[in-house]
Length: 150
Length: 430
Image 1 (cartoon, rainbow over the protein chains, first blue to last red):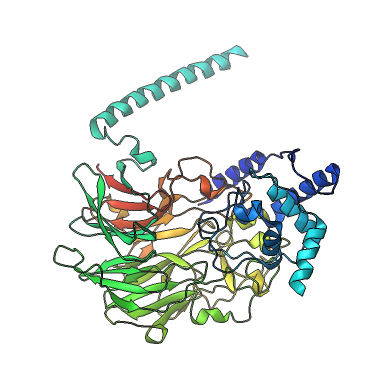
Image 2 (spheres, chains in turn red, orange):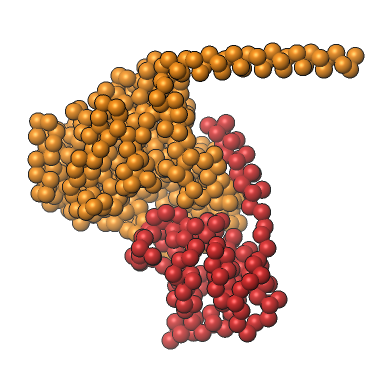
């Protein structure tokens, strides 16, 4: 067992090395924010994704079959922003098929993150993993959050 | 002075090279004689003398399976294929299986054969089908409903089943929550006091195998404090239930100040428990740390990775590294394999997902030697290579994931994969 654990540790080290940083993509549609703001948001989004999202949705955004949905060209990710923002704010713990597949793990609400942090994460996932969508800005998160409170 | 050791080194290298070449040549020759057709062992790495073939790639989500003495294979599917939830397979003389039928309009995991009946489960109910003298299902469209109304959360919803020798059936009812937090999987969220869900989930329930339409009130909570069990089997040597628990997820994600990512990748243990009536394995209040060999207080209930948990809970009989997802357990009673395997346990590990950012682990079948119903040595990897890649970073990359185990009448070991619906048959020839 010790030997196996050592092998896992070694493999793990290789994995960490393999997760090399890739620069945020330059091509994306941005709203009223400047290009440099968007680049900064995507960079912050990458770090936040690694902390709060990566375990379940995985490093490549591919998710886990049957458990955690993928973020690669998933209608929820590439579609309208409001339902996507709502998932972050409220979590997802009801049965819901996503693009014809079902996923059983609960996602907790991340309402305790700041509006800017949520915007950063969503901008990042909408412009990575093969997605190229408009970025999400703080005010859009603010609006959905205040509507939920009503 | 400098060159002399160098020459010796080169000479040694040449000798070593020649030896390897000779050994390799002999090995090839040997392989040509003994196992010419299955030299690649279906992509699996096995101990010496064992061979493997893929008997079918069914493209179905094949979970648990049974093999009758006549060689009929019944496989439970997680999702319906062509409207059927149980496949019937027949093997030909060349070792290829074909689907010869199907029945059951429900997905699920559990299937078990005993005393002239085939038992199968959906995620809420257990059915049984009467078999004829050839172990064929007599009336596939009209099973008897044995148990109904079992709770099925979004996660850990499958119901694995096994029978004892006294007319009882045992079913796993998994916890709908990862660690009984007030808000499931939310960082820092604490445990619900007393974890009341344990009254109807997070344990093994016992029902009569021949009584119809039983519900919770007709059954017994046989064991509690088990987060989710997928692999389970009845040990015939000591007439006792054994289960494999899927340990809790995300120690680091939920309590980052107490657990590093590396600790979280290895902990807690995936535990094999020997279960007696009334046992409590301690979920969600404790988890088992296979490195310290201790029961630890869960962070949701005041723990921090250092405080030990209560002694009232049972200890595992085997503690494997974390998150490997043991989905199949089988005590080997056949005569085909060498003596060391007799009465030992095979465990099919589906493979991990929540070891990120570390590499994933599992995706193999392990073996634990047993003597008189107790482990008699360290566990070892028996069959590996299911994933088809050396390093699995994300479970999606795995080509195959081991799930169910069954023993054929001749003693061959069958392993299902629920990614491509491949069924492997592992045999031994000295």
